[in-house]
Length: 329
Image (cartoon, rainbow, N blue to C red; front, side):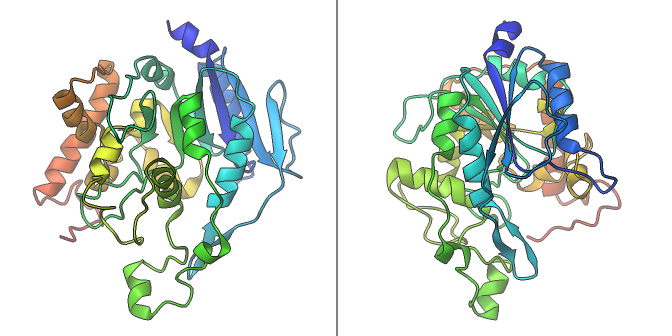
């Protein structure tokens, strides 16, 4: 069965050709890793005009005009949500297979676990707030639970999504962020700037695409970036549990190559267990709704380990020893 999935799976690599500080081509390494673990799957690279593509051989490439980026924080960094929407859709438009993995260009595949989990993806249940036909796989890193700490609502990681091509296409068929939305908090007071942690756009990139998806499907949006809920009729946790299943990096056999983020995906990483909407948050819902999904034991180990970290932290321990992260509640 896994062989069937491999032939019906496309990896849609989205973003610029990425390099590390030593000049290593990270996108080339990603392509090599896909070929190693998913040899029968298709690969599409959706990137920008004028990128050097002399390393590309035997894969489909689409090059879009780079729209540029807005500013994410007052102190700098890019707001790349419009780049993501444009390059993701350009790549998805070429996908012909039943399943697709939308993956950022600086990630790395370290095993075939992702394919095995795609094979087991359950159908979503019939509910007014079910958006997709099957569940969509996401990483729990930066998929915030609005129940934990003071996380912004509808914040779903944009690094990777996997599932039915029709579902992932629906997820990214969105309008671009407007100039007014990009500069929303530019002239905000010092107090408000602190509240939104010096973000300038109206919504964070990870909030924007889910916020627009919810608006497209149900006609409602978050009132502002600090809101923990949309309205009394739609619970944020329900929107997650009905549509996405979050997993840790090692569960999916995925890591980040770029140095500044590499620690996020180490096998001993525990930070996401503190604030994330996790597999076990979803699993509790799945048991109540009798939604079947049995992970391979090796993958389940990583999820249990993450849950244990989160449990210890929430009980008041600063774990692991020497961590600089402290309780804020």
